[in-house]
Image (spheres, rainbow, N blue to C red):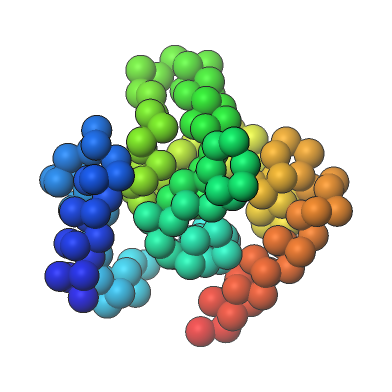
Length: 159
């Protein structure tokens, strides 16, 4: 398993040339290590399963001008939004488009966005807005996405 993850990290280096082998390899953990994490965010886990089935090298929406990339299928507009939030908060941290290939950085971007926009939101609103943008919770097109996330969420919480 660790060999497979290392090979995936090396492949990521080809696709994300600004990344280093060290920061790509730090993103890899075994399934056993993952299940030892005490506080698993089941909503995030469920969204990852729907977005990429856990594949940080996933490329989606190839029919569009700019595809979505990585574990959470992040588009360039989300990277810009996260950087806008960080700037507004006075942080010097910024993310690049190639950071979408990093599982760790993708999750960081998700939490920055979630904490800024959805401190009091329901799981449904968070998931539907992640999928459909600012007013995603109002769009009929995000209902099916939420159904998939909710199904995974119910399965994860019953384990």
